[in-house]
Image 1 (cartoon, helix red, strand yellow):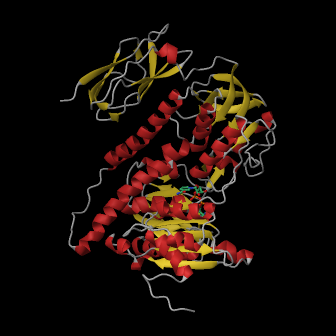
Image 2 (cartoon, rainbow, N blue to C red):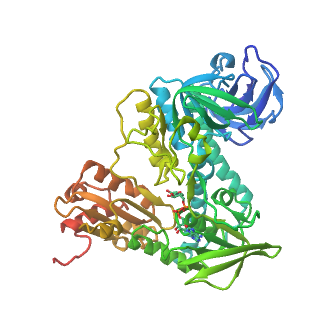
Image 3 (cartoon, protein in one colour):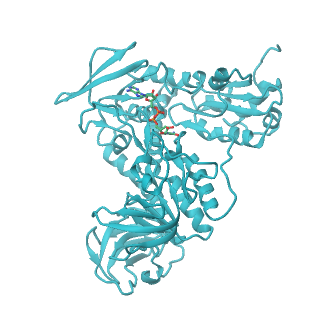
Length: 569
Ligand code: NAD
C-alpha cells in the first residue's frame, strides 16, 4: 500500500504568514518528486513549494489567497514509491526572487513562450544570471497554455472519436460517444498543467528569476515590469532578448459576444456549438474545425482566398479538402464574411464572394485569420529598437536587433510563426549573449497542420519552384500502396520528395496522412545533411511503417521502387 505523506510548508527563514498565490495541484493529480505544489508570495519573493516525493494528491488543504507559515499542511500525497526528499529552507533556495525596485540582471528575457524559456534556460546553463518576465502566471506562452499543446490534446480526442466511428464498417460498432465537455476540458488543462509546472521546475533548478508582469522598455538598459496589481518595478539589464510573441488578428466589425471566439476562446471549450463557423482556412482554423467536427458540431469554413491553406502545395491540401468537404456543412473558398450580427437566436453571418451563400445562422464563430506580432507592445522605441510598420522587430542571423545588446526571437521577428523556429532562435540568441559565435543557419523549418489528415511540408515547395522557374526532380509514393496505412484504415495520404535534378539531393518534401507531422522530420534531416535520393532509399526503414513511404518516394525518383510498378520513361 502506498504511504500517505503530509506535504507541509518548509522553513521560510525570516518569512511567516505568507500568501498562497497559486495552488498548482488538485486531488487526483499525479506529481513528480520536487514538482511544485503551491506558489507563495512575500513582498520580496515568489517561491514554489515542491513535493517531497512522487505520488498522487489525495487532498489539498490550502486555498489560493490563504496565508501559511512553516509547517502549514498543504496536501496529503499518496506516494508511488521512490525516494523522498527533504525540502531545504526556501529562504535559502529562493529562485524566483522578486527584484526590489531597480534590481538588475545580466540577461532579461521578455516572454516565456517556447522561444523565451528556451533562451532563458540556455543562457542560465551558460552561466548568465537570467530574469524571465511573462504576463501570465504559468510559463510556456501561447504554445503551451493556449495553442499547440491544448489543441493537440483536443485533436487527439477528436481523432479517437472518428477512428472509433470509422471501424463501424469493419466489424466494430461503438455507441455514439457521450461527450462531457467539462471533463474533456479538465483533462486538456491537466496536460497543459503538467508541462507548465515542469517548466517552473526547470526554471527553479536553473535559478532563473521568474517575474510575473508586463514588460516595457524604459531605456536601452532598463525595463519596467507592471504586475497584475498595477505595481511597477524597474529592472536594469546588461542584455535583453525580446520573445514577446504574437496575438490573434481580428477582422473589423465582429460583435463583442461570448459566442465569437479566437483560438484561445475555442480552446476553452466553453461548450460545443451546434452550428460552428470557422473564419479563416489556415492552420489554426482547420485544426479547430477538426476538433469541433470530431466533437459533434456541424462545421462550416469560410476562406478569403481560392484555396484552403494558401501557399501550401495544392496536391498536399487536396486529400484534406476532400475529407473536410465530405464531412462539413460547407467549405466556402473565395468568400469573405461581411458581417456578424448577434441575437438571442444566434449569430447571423453575411458573406460576399464567389461561393457566398445567403446569410446563415450559427451558434458559434471562430475567427482565425492570422496572428499579429507584439512588437508594438513593448515600448521598443524607448530602447531605440527598430520595429517595422507591421510590428515585427528586424534581426540579423545572430538574432541581434539594431541595438546590439538587445536580441529578438520567435513570432515577433517574422514568419513562420512556429514554436520550433522560436526555440532554435532562442538558443542562438542565448549563446550569442553568452559570448559564443552562434548564428541561425537552419536550411529549412518544417510546417505541420495537425488536421485529419495531417499535412506537413519542408524545404522547397513545388508552388515556390514554379514561381521561380526552378526545375525539380520528384518522387511520390501513394499510401494506398502502404500496408501500414491500409491497416490503419486509411489510404488517403501520400509522401513526395523533391530533388535537385543534377545532384539528386533532397531539397524539399511533403506528406499528407496520419502522423505526417512526425514523419516530416526525416525529410528535414535529409535536407540538412545534404542527403541524396540514394541515401534515403538505401537507408533500411522498418516494415511495416509509414516511415517507409519516405524511402519509397526516394526509390520512386531513383527508379528502384518495387512496391509499385512505374513504367520506365
Ligand atoms: P494563417 O495566416 O495561416 O491563416 C489565416 C487564413 O485566414 C488565411 O488562409 C487567410 O487567407 C484567411 N483569411 C484572412 N482574412 C480572412 C477573412 N476576412 N475571411 C476569411 N478568411 C480570411 O493564420 P492562422 O491559421 O490564424 O495561424 C496563425 C499563425 O500561427 C500562422 O503563422 C501559423 O503558422 C501559426 N500556427 C501554426 C500551427 C502549427 O504549426 N500547427 C498551428 C497554429 C498556428
